[in-house]
Length: 158
Image (cartoon, rainbow, N blue to C red; front, side, top):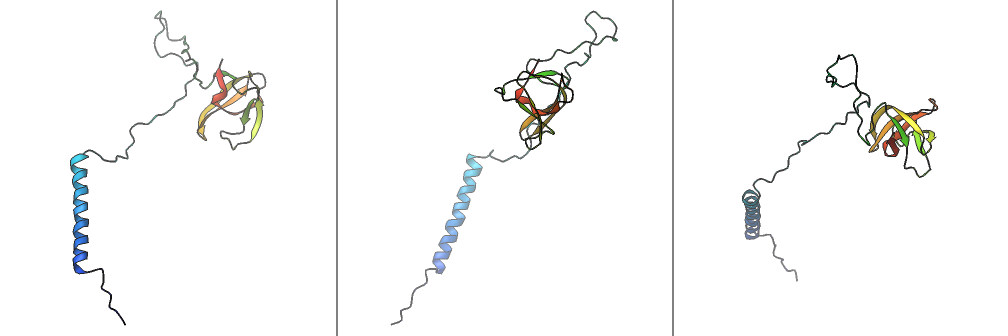
């Protein structure tokens, strides 16, 4: 009662499978070459953005309008809403909960002080980008001992 089973993998089946595989590869190559000839992946950097903070009181680089001597420096006007090193700022948008002033830039740093809504500060260092946030080191105008790093989102130029 022993029956002999025929093997599915015959020489003809293997040759047919190889021919179909090669044909599919050629068809794929032709489609790529004829229909999408300019389709390629390019891993080069297209553009880089570098943020350079500027002081709100830089001397101008040109001659004074009246043509006088260069001993007098004029202030570069600050742009509305732009925060820069040396500027006076005010804490806003905290919903009266206050703004955490941390020992360093980053949400994992220790909270040193809470800046109250409307309180005035001066920017003394920064910016630093940490935890996908822009951080500035600020110092209280009324209490120079109250210094720490805070997120830019809650700082408004005065």
